Image (cartoon, rainbow, N blue to C red; front, side, top):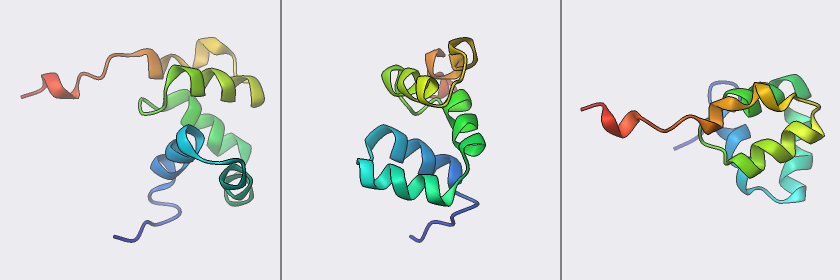
Length: 79
């Protein structure tokens, strides 16, 4: 399965922020601007709290704006 840079950017950014190496992050920053990355940090439910806190400091995002990762994952409750 091939991923599309624009269509799959939320997933790509989330995974690199969570699991990427420094080299991966450098590549990420060359592909996406900091505003796009900040939006993922604010809205993602698939990055961990530690990752969200770290990137909120790097990208100057107020902690109050990264509450999405704190919400319970309720998708398994929908049946």
